Amino acid sequence: MFSVQSVLKPSLKEAILLTIAIVGIISYCIIFLETVPHIPLLLAIFLLMLYGFIRKVPFHEMEMGVFNGAKSGMGAVFIFFFIGILISSWMLSGTIPTIIYVGFHLVTPYFFYAIIFVVTAIIGLCIGSSLTTVATAGVAFIGVAAAIDASLAITAGAIVSGAFFGDKMSPLSDTTNLAASIVEVDLFTHIRNMAWTTIPAFLFSIIAFAFLSPKIELTHFPKIEEMQHTLMKEELIHWYAIIPLIILLIFSIKKISAFITLAVSSAVAVCFSFIHTSYSLSEVFNILFSGYVSKTGNADIDALLTRGGMDSMMFTISLVLLALGLGGLLFTLGIIPKLFKTIEHKLKTVGSLIFSTALSAVGINVLVGEQYLSILLTGEAFKNQYDRLGLQKKNLSRALEDAGTVINPLVPWGVCGVFITKVLEVPTMSYLPFAFFCLLSPILTILFGITGFSISRK
Image (cartoon, rainbow, N blue to C red; front, top):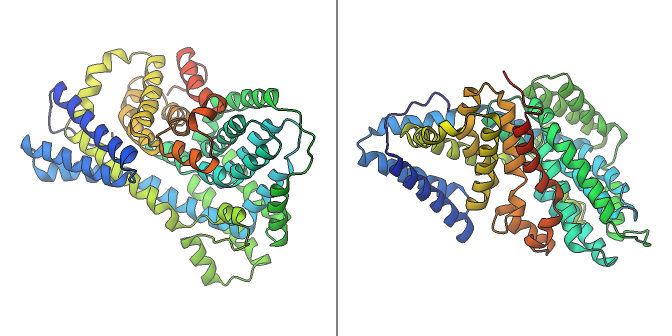
C-alpha cells in the first residue's frame, strides 16, 4: 500500500484481535447506531493509536502513516470534484433530463420486468446514483406494478438490478470512480474491463426478467406519463443535449484522460445551457459548486434532478480520506502485512486471489453494511498481491465492483438494503432472489478468475 513502511511487527494474535475490534466498532456504529461511517472510522484510528502508544511507537510515525494513507487518495479527490461539476453541467444542458425522458418512453406493457430493468439501468447510468434511481423512477415503477397486480418482489428485483448496473458502469458514479482510483487504474479502462463480467450478467438478467414478465393489458402508465409531461413542460428536453454524452463516449473510446474527458464534456454542457436558460455566469458557477436544484413542482422529478456540484462530493471525499488514513495506519503498525503474510502461501494462483478478493468485499458488506468500505479496505489490502502475481490492477478494480458495489443492496442491514426496503416498501429478502444482476456479478468474477478468462497480465 502506497509507500507506507511497517514500523512494528505485531503477533498474529494481536493483528487478529485488532482487526476484529475495528470491524466490531464500525459494524456496531453503522448497523445498530445507524451513524455515518466517518465517526466509527475515527474511533478505529484512535484505537490503533492507543495500541501504538502501548507498543511505544513514536506518535510522528503513526501520524505519517495516516497522512501517507490519505495522500494516496488525492487522485480520487480531484476526480470526484470533476464528477460533481459534470453532473451539475449535464443538468443545466438538459443532458440527463433528455436521457431520462427517452428512457421512460421505452416503458411498455410487453416484457414489463425486463423493460423496468433496462430503463432503471439507463437512468442509473446517466445520473450515477443507484439510490436516487431507486427512490424516484423505482418508486414510480412500484406504483405501476401495484396498479396492474404485478409481483412487487420481482419488480423491486428488476429496479435494484438496473439501478446498480447503472451505478457500477457509470463514469458519474462515486463507487466506480472510487474503485478505479483506489487501485490507480484509469476510470475508462476500469469501465471497459468491467464489461467482461457486466454484459453477460446484464444479458442474462434481461432474459430472466422477460421470461418472468406477466401479460398486461393496461397500456397507460399515468405516473410515468406525468413525469414525462413535466420534463417537457419545463423545457428540459433538447436535441443538442445529447452532445456532451457523445463527447464523453468518444473520449472514453479514444482512451483520453478522465480529467480531460470530464472537463471537456462539462465545458460543452455549460456552453449549451446558455441557449435555453437565463442563468448568469456567476449563477452557473454557483450551480457547479453547490449543485443543480430542480423546481418543477413534481416531487419525483425534483428528487431525480436535484443533484451534482462539487459540494455534493464532500461526504464521499471525507470518507475516502478517513478510510485511507485508517489503512495507512494499519500498514504502519504492521497489522495488514502480518495478516497477509499468514495467508500469503495460499494466494499462489489467480483463482484463489480473485476468490479471496471477492469474499473479502462481500464479507465487509455483510459485517459492516457499507459498500464504500468494502471497496476501500479490500482494494488497499489486496493491491500488492496482484502485483506479486503479475496481474494488471484493473483485475482488482473489477473484482471490487463485482463483489462490493452490487452486494450492499442484498444485505438487509446494509446501508443500501435498509434504504431500498424503506422507499420501495418491499423487504430485502423478498426482492433478493430476483436481483439477478447483483447475484450474478460476484459469481462471474470468481468464475473468470478460476478459468483465467479476460484476466489481464502485465
